[in-house]
Image (tube, one colour):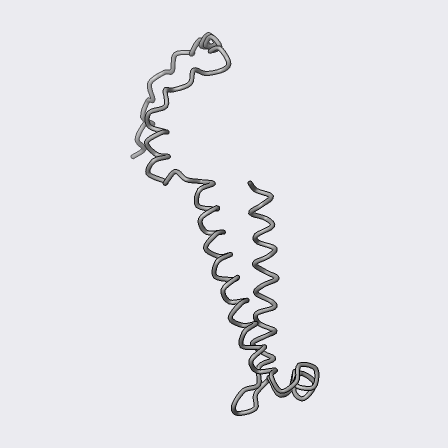
Length: 125
């Protein structure tokens, strides 16, 4: 399952980059980046129908991107399907685990020497 999710992430990145490239290649009405990047070379290779090809490619790549994103969201949400509140209830219901190591006996206390009460110093006059 995790391998398939990783493969979908790779497809997501590739489709995203291709979508950006196709959008940048489109010829804008006011002469933006499309003219600088694609320009006449794109029309020479695809012919007069270059605009329709780019519009179709944008639509197809956009649909693939949308579907892939929805599938990824669904698959990654089912991997950790329990909500935070459900996890909290499981933790509260779990019995306490006993300590793995036995308790060591307490060390005997050292004898304490008696302390003499403090005597105030004599007053000088």
